[in-house]
Amino acid sequence: NTGIAMIGSGSATPPVSLDNQRLSQIVETSDEWIASRTGIRDRRVADPQTSLCSLATAASKQAIAMAQIDPSEIDLIVLATSTPDDLFGSASQIQAQLGATQAVAFDLTAACSGFIFGLVTAAQFIRTGVYKTVLLIGGDILSRWVDWSDRRTCVLFGDGAGAVVLQASECDRLLGFELRSDGTQNGCLNLSFQAQPQPLIDQITVSPGTYQPITMNGKEVYRFAVKKVPEVIEKALFRADLTVDQINWLILHQANQRIIDAVAQRLNIPSDRVISNLANYGNTSAASIPIALDEAVRAGKIKPGDVIATSGFGAGLTWGAAIFQW
Ligand code: ACO
Image (cartoon, rainbow, N blue to C red):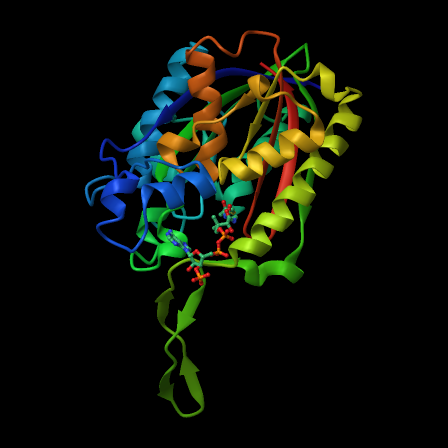
């Protein structure tokens, strides 16, 4: 089987920021409440001109440039998102905007676990020798789907996209992974379709409708993350035949600083090896891991050969971990 290497990263966020102070003019909240409970101080929001495809394409161009490949070399584009511009899928539009003429492109939905699920999916195509070069994007515009009058959710999320280029390699740098789902807890976190039934003819009723804003049981999601994320990282480490002290960096889905701190503590990972950009961007769903990764790579924090443990978790419920070497 062929090995997998990550050879480029990129990220893009909308220019408009909405800090806690300004949010407190919209809903009854405060910088103190939000920052102390979540670590979030600022977030970026997409204006009506900013599409998911434009963010994803911008992030992809950076990743392609770092990888020093031509877009025509890309065999597959996987877009992990829950907020496509088009429910039929947005990956093809990105393929067109990049001029990745040879690539097949599709969307993958796994909420905040999307990047990890996408990474493992992309890796299978490389492992089997079917494809050589894959562009993986995690991107979401959750500002489209929050209820901006609900202070329990609207303070948490932000918009953005991150991308990586994966390529077949003799030296395998995807060292281990583990994916999980638990649909029995689906009701904890939803962005669900609500039908408005419309009798059509005779006995036939159809159900047009629309998606409803995000609903979340914050306490349940918190408990779930703090319990399951350390377990799944330990499992992925076991598969990689590594121990916690061999990890250079921990990059978790950026949902809440308290979740990040609790997981790091349970795994005994010192805080100077934990990457967090939550203060600037809030929870960008499928984009949070690749944005954090890209920023740390560009800042020179993550160096070639470093071992990174990463974990995504969220709606579904879904969660997973991957251990890879930069
Ligand atoms: N500002 C001020 N007060 C608030 C706010 C706010 N933004 N939000 C809630 N409150 C109030 C509540 O109304 C409640 O008041 P009450 O007691 O008078 O009813 C009080 O604060 C406590 O509310 P809780 O919801 O119990 O607050 P909690 O301490 O649980 O913190 C939080 C809420 C931060 C959401 C926490 O539960 C959490 O982080 N959970 C994890 C959520 C998460 O990470 N979700 C995303 C992961 S999955 C994914 O990424 C899609």
